[in-house]
Every structure is written in structure tokens, then in C-alpha cells.
Amino acid sequence: METFDSKNLQNLDKQTLITMLELSLASNNALKKNVEDLNKRIDLLTEQMILANSQRFGRKSEKDLTDEADGQMRFVFNEAEGTYDIVCNLKEPEASEVIHPKAYRRVKKKKGKREADLADIVTTVVEHTITEEKLEEAFPDGKWKRLPDEVYKRLEFHPATFEVIEHHVAVYAGKGEKTVIKADRPTDMFRNSIATPSLVAGILNYKYVNAMPISRLAAEFERQEVKISSQNMCHWAIKSSNMYLSRLYKRMHMYMSDYHVIHADETPLKVNRDGRPTGSKSYMWVYRTGGLEEHPIVLYEYQKTRKTDHPREFLRDFRGYCVTDGYQVYHTIDNERPDLKVAGCWVHARRGFAELIKATGKAASKGTTAYKAAALIDEMFSKEKTYKGLSSGERLNKRQEEVAPLVDAFFAYIKKEAQNVAPKSKLGKSITYCLNQEKYLRVFLEDGLVPMDNNAAERSIRPFCLGKKNWNVIDTVSGARASAVLYSIAETAKANNLKPYEYFRYLLEEIPKHGEFEEENYLDSLLPWSPDLPEECKKQTDE
Image (cartoon, rainbow, N blue to C red):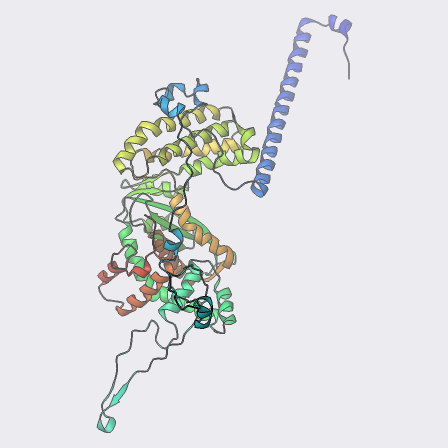
């Protein structure tokens, strides 16, 4: 390859020099672009490695990742080009709020708490006295009196106990035994079965409330010399669901349509024998009434797929707001129906930014786009917490006054930053998610009963997710459908401050008294918020 020194270059004509310069610049630009592309790839790989390490070894909680949830919005005013014009009219805190912070006050231990905690538990009194001989020895003159006892309490634990109830039904016959009559016998759950409401309720409580696999429960019973196969237990669970508890499930579904807000979510599961190849994914959907409304209802629904048809059918009679994550099937229904509107979840919007902060560390993240975006969202949630207890109208007014400017600032900021971020990076994907969901994330500003997040649904589906880690798969479709009903009863009971075991037992005592085709108005007295429920079903709550 020919090389040129200064003398050779002087002999070249002008056009040749220009051509050489253009080639050199083109080569430099190509090299520069290659370096930039390589740096982007290195940055993406570095980010992926940091995120992978964070997910494996880092903190799981997304709380307290920013310091900005204090009403001051410090960083926003440094972003003059992007957001100052939007947030400059925000109401400033009063001077007294800044200069005189609320004094720390140590909370005193509530007196009588132990007695209150033990008040509803059966108490056995054990007397500890002194013999007459020792009293005579201590008081030779015989003059003594008994003072009030020194009283202390200890809590004993008794493992599950079993009792066989043997029923004897009187039988009478007339002369010649032509007429035979029997005494009335209680209504049985299952004819010719040893199962009772208390036994089946205990099994349901262990599995659907405490996430204990049936096989493990059968082994525990056997250790107590009660031999009931896991197959029998599963049969009783499915049968109690199909024959009785599904009636209450349908009733609650009917009432769910009257609510103003519903939360929705779904999670995958495996069903062994569902007519498809092994390993095929099924889904458990969950629907929960609005977290800001009274008398919560939680309903699970098993489906083989994650198609739009399932929520479309389940929500057919519902009119109102549906709070979800960003899954497209809900947006499809939103576009189809003018009487149903989907609201987005700000916790999901925050999650991508939070993962970046956790991966790089809170201190190192300060000043980054992820930190600033998360801080704005934290500020929204901080405001929202102060509206607890307000009416829906008052909450809506507060949101319009205090939160709406923060929402505007958030979207203005990430739109500006999106121009400088690699789309395929974690930050780029997080920003793109929020921009795509903007329409739905703003819906909570329209109605005071619509919450900012979908946490209510995620809390309701968590027990199922924990349970499936223990039992891994459901064997049959009928088992999956029964599980949907039984989880629904258990979670709705918990949401309404009931004791799930006592509630299951009461339902299995009362529903069998009514025929399958009987008018179902009696079910209203069995709903989890019914005032007709016995006190033993209700959990005592601190007022």
C-alpha cells in the first residue's frame, strides 16, 4: 500500500486531495459509528449483567428507593427545560411544615393487649392452693385469710384432635312389622361418607388457606393414627365445591357486577390431564372488587388459555372501571365497550425504574433518569396516602389539585429523556412501557374510587401463587375448577375479616339443608358480609 509524506502530498492536484480527504472522513465516521454501536452493546450487556445479579442476589423490596417523597419535588425544578413550566404552580408547603417537623413520639405499649388477644380463647382455670397442714405450720394461731389470687396466663397448644360421632337412629315397627318408621336424622353432606363439615372444612383450610399439599396433610393425619387417603381428601374437596360452595361462588359473581371498580390479574399454572400435551400452560384468573369499596369479593376462574374471550365473558355484565396491568386483552375489551374502562397500574409503571435503582444502588442512582422518574411516582403515592378516609369526591378533588400536576410532569420528563435513551435498554423499555400506557395510567384522575395501582388483585392472587409452589401441578381440570371456587371462598372470607375454617364449616353445615334447585335467596344470608353470620365466623378486629 502506497504511503504519502508531505513532499508527495504537495505534488498532488487539488481534486485528488479533496477525494482523499472525503475518503478519510468517511472512514473516520464509519469507525466512529462502529465504536458507538460497540459501546451501546457493551452498555446493554453490562446492564443485563447488573440486573441479573440484582435479581439473584439483590434486595427484593421496592420500598424506600428514593428520598423524594417529601412534597418538595427538589429535582424537578432543576429540569427547567422539561418540566418547570408544568409544575411551577404546585402549591408550596407552609413554612411551619418545613421549619417545624412533627416531633418524634414513642408509642406506648397498649395496656391489656395480652388479655384482649386471649379473650376469645377457651380458658381452663387451674387452682394452685396450699394444704391445710402447711397453712397451720405457717399460721400456728390459726388466724389467716385468703387474699385475691395471683393470676397469670399461659397458652397451651393442642394438635388437631379427632372424634368419632356414632349416630343411633331409632327405628320403630308396628304389629306384624308392616309399618316401619325412623327418627329424623341430620342432613348429611355426602351420603354414606364419614366426611363431616368440620373435617372437610379443616382439609380446605389446610390446603386453600395454609397452602399445605393434600399428600402432606394425609401424612400428618396418619401420624395421628387417622388414615384418610389423599385421594379421598381430594374427592371431598372437589365434591364440596361442585355440590355446595359453587352456589355461593355464582351468587358472589352476580353481586360483583354491581360494583363500580374491579381489579383483574392472572397467573400461569400446570394441569396434568387437560387433553393437551404435557407441560401446556393453563391460567388462573383473579377478579377482585375495588380496593376502595366496601364488602370485597375475590373470585378466581380457571381457563386453559390467556385469550381475550375469558375476561370478556366474565366481565360481560360489569359496568365500570377495570384496574389491570398492561396486558393487551384488557385494552381490547376497553376498545370494544363504551361502558367499561380500563385503568393502568402505577406500581407496574414504577417497577422498571425500581429494578434499575436496586441494581445500581440507591446512592449511585441519584441523579439518573430512573431515579428521577421513580421519585416522581413515589411523590404521587405519598400524596395518595394522605387521602385515606376521604370520600370519593374529596379524593378526586385532591388528586386533581395535587397529583395531576405530578402526572403531567412525569410524562413530560420521560418524553424528553426518551430521545437520549437506547430503546432496547432497560431504561428505554421502562420509558416505552409508560408512554404506551399513558392513556390508562391517567384514568385514576377521573374517578375517586379508582385506585392508583392493581395491588388489590396481586394481593388476592398471591396465596394461589404460594400454594402452587408447594403442589406444583393440579392433576385434573375438575380439580382446577374446584380450586378456583375454594380459593375464591377463602380469599373473600379473609378480605371480609372472617375466619376461613369457621366460615367453611358453617357453609358446609347450612348449604346442604337446601336443595340444588331451590330458590337461591337463602344464599344472601351466607355471604361473607352478611349480619346473619354467627359470631364464631368473625375475626375480632382492633377498632
